[in-house]
Length: 295
Image 1: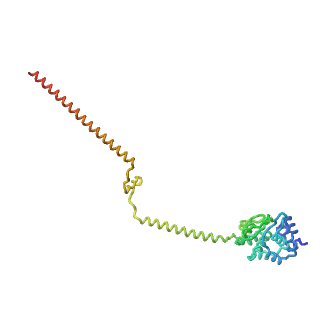
Image 2 (image 1 turned 90 degrees about the vertical axis):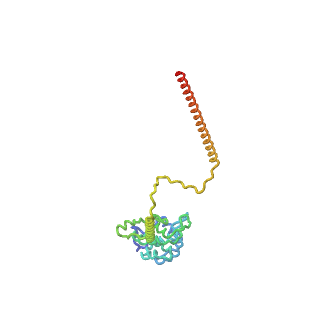
Image 3 (image 1 turned 180 degrees about the vertical axis):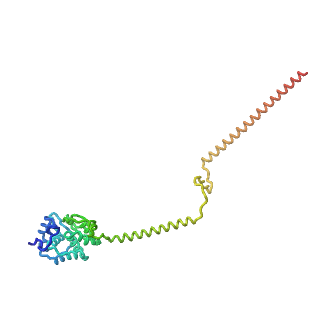
């Protein structure tokens, strides 16, 4: 009798609300001590007190599959089916983060797709830290926005198979939901405006530089194809010992060449003088012969 669903409770997803949690986990919850002692005879008003006492979230943990108090309260809420206004107050509670997490998880199980997007998406702006007990019976740190993102994207959270959620773009096309407006959109707009202002300033600087360059007098025409002369050194460089030796060799060669040229000139002069002397002798001989003939 204590584990039966309330008679006035409506069906959720076409079945008994408690059947949203698997039978194995459900039987473990019925046998645990927290369910028998703290969840007995709870009403919608008394669930709030138990939710405030929560210190962590979690599913089942340990080798014996021990359910957490968070999961026990979820099953109790599915059993009594509190009104929608109570769940909305759970979600809007900003003082107790685990109360908000409890309401968000119940809304994901029992609410419609439109209600889930409507009430859970604003919780993306909640960045508070929470403790979560994992399957290995160890605590890990998780933020509220990460937990909400898992509820909207994952198929299984805290060892509970979540009902199928309709996609948001389909609801937007059917005009059942308005396009989502993120808080980050304002920051993005501010960054874009600042970037536009910076681009305008850069363009103004470029135009100023162009005007300055146009105002400057133009240089004379220059033939850039012609190689430029290397600048002459300011001070003469002292010759190296190799250069000195090459200069001496060059001088000795030039002297020997001049000597050979002078010798060749002298030999030519001597040869020409001998030739002239021979011609004179021949002429004198011819003249003497002619005189003898005449006599």
